[in-house]
Length: 150
Image (cartoon, rainbow, N blue to C red; front, side):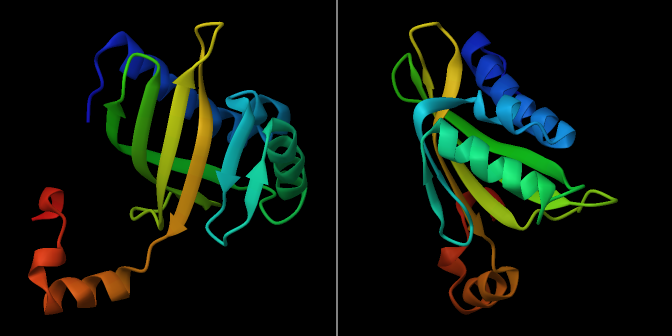
């Protein structure tokens, strides 16, 4: 989906920056894209609070569980709520080797424009998709299929 306004482009650039920082395994650069008081909820339910917590956890992840991984990201929608707040829904995944065709997580980012005019992520929530359960529920109750997927 093309995002053509300057603010949409700036918001998209923040998410592109996340992918780039992840590729370099640069926890500090990754953390700079979040507000000082950001919240970060992982798909397993861990809630990190504040930029420092996000940086420290990603430094550990990049050196451990997620060492050598890359980040895939796909923006589904950007909505602005006033001039300084954006909500982004997307899909994402971590991977090694070939980028997966189907991304296994659904993500919500809330971004704010701070006093320095930079957009930063104030909140992130990552949820693991359950494609089999989703498919079954859609077959049993077709009205559950999101309008964008009908």
